[in-house]
Image (cartoon, rainbow, N blue to C red; front, side, top):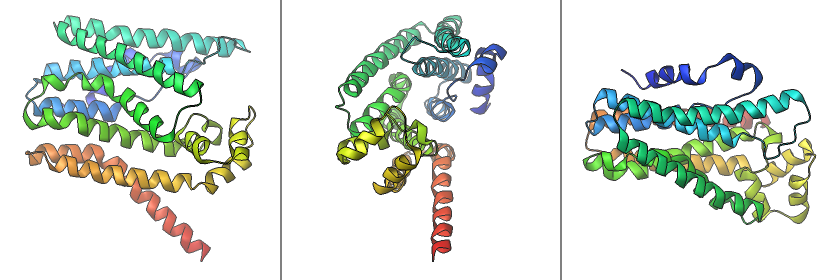
Length: 293
């Protein structure tokens, strides 16, 4: 049984024609689910429980992430937008509810309690997050810290069920891993200049930028060429690449502390996409610099 199997097991719960045709869903939290599955295995959790824990947690995460995609305003200009919004609300509720059924059928009542508590904590964190955003008190580092905590909270529910060094290292490795995932997503957001508001880049410039640059980013109608120039001016992509490189190296070191070579190799494979991404970007940068010479 591989961790990729969890995604396949989740498809009957998330793959519906009505949703696929009329709205979009967030990405499946595959890498965090793989990480959880690996740590549970290292702690001696049997295969059946590992599967149901990973599947249930991934569905709750999908539910929370789907609700995050619902527009804040309830005013839809077109029928298609209204349908998309309604489907996101219903889909998020549906995904979140299925974990109760899965864990109850498996007799895992304690895990229902722990995950339910985690959902409450995630919602509390989000309220604090949104308050900072609304008051324009968010900083780039606070954005990274809070976003990482929100993404990690459900998976931290399993800490007490782990054993030995794995239990000790799980929270730190999960946080480092989630931070890598988040920074990678922030880099991807740079490809869509219309998706900058609310990003790490946005809060960095709101914190360190000039009044004029802030005004441009806050405008209702974004000027893509000016936005691109501002991102270049503040070396946003370079800063994010450096942050990701530093975080990946830190994660390597944390994994090396594990006392099982086999388990360490399994984790290295999960982290590999981040390292590969950095290597690809390094090659592209070197090629670009060569063209400019």
